[in-house]
Length: 482
Image (tube, rainbow, N blue to C red; front, top):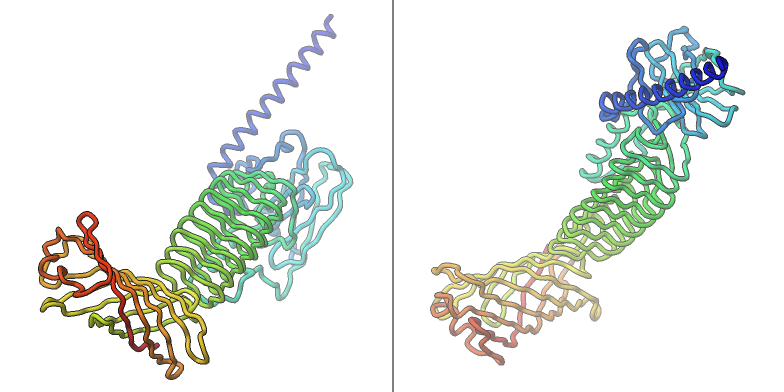
């Protein structure tokens, strides 16, 4: 009976010990979360400091003894601070402290491990352990005379935006000691993460290439092979293959093969092959496919289609479609023209010959009154015969009655078919027929003083509510130059 009572007490003590260990682990988890991992930078700490378990989804710390050791310099036997000690298969890593010591939790199961030690400026080394004992390992690293420092993989950029993004990303990476030290790439089939370091990839998420990644707040990786889905944000240093999608945005620093879809923004510092879509902003150093945004699309070079309110590129081999499209090597022409109503106008065309935007201002005199116009439109050019080109322009303008208040919308639209002949590489002349339409507000005080007889003749006239609509056939001619 006494023996049975003793066994019950032993079992009760073991249960309390296990419960207490779990409570202490959770406390350590929270302390580590608020004290270090919001900083996203891993730095060595003094051995005498309170050393709670490092943040990461690593329950093995509760049930196993750590692998312990010291890392020294081979040249002078001084302790090496901030060296990475890691095991690749289970993606476990730690940093040496100020006295060169380390503790690495390897978990249950496999008993044979290859342990690697890396430090920027030193030659890498490794050793095997057959089982997890409490022997303290003493390891030495050889200093390299001319070390190759870890650098941003994108060293050649041509645009100010690109160089700014590249510099910021390099500064971000430089805060991560494991990224600076380790040259290996880890691999994972599935990963779940909350923040950098709070993931199933532990402290090496920035160095791990994943097949499928689910990131709840901010996820980092060396790349994705199938799917990377973020509730808020994704960041990858390597290639993305498949789909990268997030509610806020995505950042990729190498090629994307597939689709990059962000709720607000996408940034790719290299090439996109496929689709890049966001509501506000897209940037890709170059892309082959479709870049679509309600706001701004920007790239160095593209071959495909840009669709957005504003499109900006250096080299465009496709077609940008938007309210304002600018390609540095694209179609840029200034125009001075005159039409059958003696409307003298100045306009600017920008985009590509396949699709360009038109911004124009104009002036005319009608029945002794001055009328101005300001508007915009779009157009396209195609080869016609020999040096000649055939152009189609569609513009919409607001008529402005000089000497009277601008009280309402008075629209003036024109569809022009023009035949364009180049005088030289910078100057060309054009002429062609046009169909014009006006929609003039009869309740506007300027209607009786400026617009009642504008134009004097038309082949179509009707009244629709407050508006008089007129249409007529005319012509337009002028000169365009760079």
